[in-house]
Length: 397
Image (cartoon, rainbow, N blue to C red; front, top):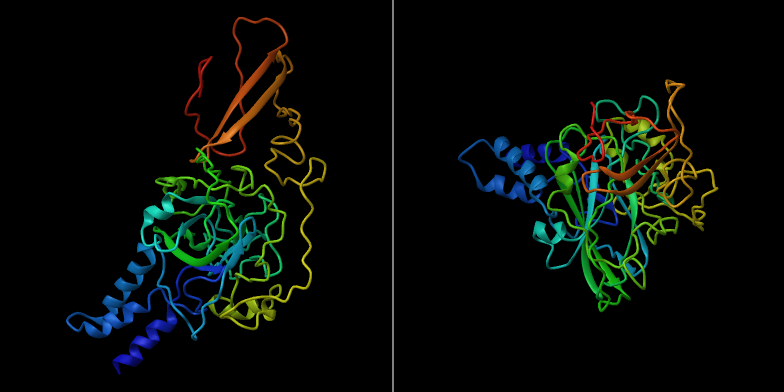
């Protein structure tokens, strides 16, 4: 009788999210948060088993840095890449939306400590949400939440809300096994969840040395309601990885390239959806035939066009479509309440960098039309900001 009760609890509780591309340490599509915890429950009889189960379940998912490395059905799925390859990294939505995902890479054998991943962060991206009108409510959506299917991939940095991304395998890694980690506190969950995948890398040049970047670029995302962005970035250090064959480079400079594992479908299964019937009718969900190895049959997947400054898409760190960032400066547009007697003729704002907390450092230059003794400049922002430093004038709030 005890065994039957435990199985009922096991089948009803899923982990909140896990890495599904590349294949993670635990590829069970119905994975609970902790299978090892069930053994411990059977051994302990002094307190109610349901209470112990709940404790062990929560503890394993939030402690990290990885889940247990299991071999399900006697199979270990290979994740083999060469230096310079792009790799699709995806996670199952499990009906949640909002927040960020931190991605880090550490050598296999060093992956059992948080510090190994904290010191080797590759990027931070959005967890994802269903962008269709009315489909994301209070941090939840119906799995698959418009997540990207297999044979599709994120080709532009701004297309970052579909529960996946791609990363570039660094050129300065020694041949060997590594562990890729995702860390996320999605939706309203007050703590982080972790998932890892074992990756074999060859063809690198470990003699290359690339200085560590000072900043982690953080995109604007639909926020989770419990864990702030600063919790993702504290203790996080950019890895000393070379993303070009001849130097540091940028991890997403060639994001338009097709990732090697493009066939992987991070949505996995409709079994985790709160709307199983509706899920099966979503784009290509019915084409996933093996939940343990979720893939699509692709045929030829052509790379997206390389971004340009005249392609009509905001796709390469531009301020607006085809202007700002690597393109020509965007024209200054004034709000309709601009006074007719303004004394300036031109306004320039140059973005310097994204700081790790998501702030923007920049220089604002006002070209004055004629001399005035006192003047005031008003800045308009499209989101809530905090001005932490200013100089050359008085800040009026």
